[in-house]
Amino acid sequence: MTGTEYGLYIQGRWTTPASAARFSTFNPATGEEIGSFVAATPAHARGAIDAAQAAFPSWRDTPAPVRGSLLLRTAALLRERKEALGRLVTREMGKILPEARGDLQESIDFLEYMAGEGRRLAGETVPSELPSKFCLTVRQPKGVVAVITPWNFPTSIPNWKIAAALVCGNTVVFKPASTVAACAAEVVRAYADAGLPPGVLNLITGSGGTVGGALLDDPRIRGISFTGGVETGREIYVRAARGIKTVHLELGGKNPMIVMEDARLDLALEGLLFGAFGTAGQRCTATSRLILHEAIYDTFLERLLERVQRLRIGDPLDPATDMGPVGGPDQERRILDYIAIGEKEGALLRAGGKKLTAPPFDRGHFIEPTVFEARPEHRIATEEIFGPVLAVLRARDYEEAVRIANGVDYGLSSSIYTSSIERAFRAVHDLEAGITYVNAPTIGAEVQLPFGGVKNTGNGGREAGSVAIDEFTEIKSVFIDYSNRLQKAQIDPPAG
Image 1 (cartoon, rainbow, N blue to C red):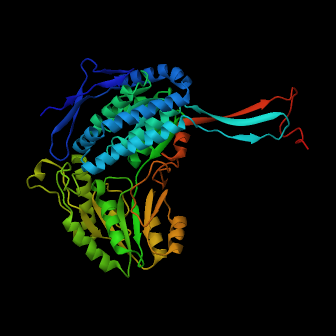
Image 2 (spheres, rainbow, N blue to C red):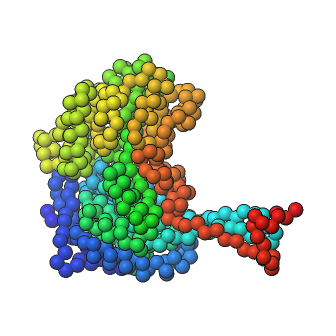
Image 3 (tube, rainbow, N blue to C red):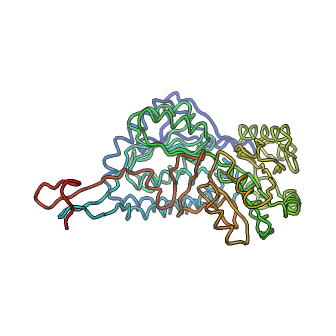
């Protein structure tokens, strides 16, 4: 079966440049071709920047409420197309259909949330130290921004960035992960069908190594928003610094879930299974470390192993399936390499650990849900694997559990299960993470709260929530003096 053929989207038109090389995306469960795409060159990237630069003055001057209304129309179109696009997400990325629908719903939710910012985009007013003088701040767009997104949330992460950038008045060049290019194209199509003016949003597909340099080095790109791996993020950060560009990085996670001896174990187990094996563990917020108080360690581990054996792996479009494939051959190789590292370092493999190869799994990339008993120093307990691999660790008490939780280079999400309100509030204070859940797993962020982390998880900014606009605006301070005389701040004494 031949997939759909897509072009680049530049200046409001879908185009296939003459003699352009092409690449394809494939269903990680079946090997079916999903679509064929243009492998963009640096020249194509510069053309997209040209279009965005030309469109910027008019879009900047479009009233923000009007920009917000366009986001609302885009959300309505995605709602109409939710089932079809959810099936596309499942076919191209591999997550089970309920999670794919959730990916679209998160896109819809965020677009609706950001549409409201079109009537806010708030600054602040403050008193002046001088009489007859008014002080305030206003937000202004940065200009042309580049949005570079990963494959695991192929509609929601792009919309997190694009919607916030657009409502603030920026124009966008969007470079998605190559393995989910069809999902990205359909996201862009929704904005176009909603009436977005030509050049305001442009899509280029292909290798980041090929077109990324054009985005990083072009002085017209004033901001870069990237979600992906630490090494790529570090390279982007360093290279963009030469142009004094603002860079927002959302990178990895090695997220701990602490289960104390006073926790509701049934609730914790349900949360763990979703947190560790939902989306086949391919979330930056996935629960990849389980830290158990020694008093309940054996009991909880036994129950966990029994439930893992019952997880149904298979066709992600089948409603009976609990876990689908991993994202593709590169992801499969990485996960299997880490499983081998865990065994070599002496971690005890208690469940899974193998690629499924018998029919019907032979055409796809399926790995068993995998559980290790590990020590904090093991690489599988410190490095991001991004797959269905869980490291289980033992702690003597709350203090040791927190030390283990904080003993990695990442700090995105964290979780504690306890019946103690004291421990819950202590954990909120003590855990080194941008997100902490109490009696819930490490996944499940909501769009009205900021998303991001500390340490190697990123460079300190946040997406989503009311602060999403911070990434895509500049603050201008405004002083209006209506005293009809020269007044000198810090020199003239304050009135009174």
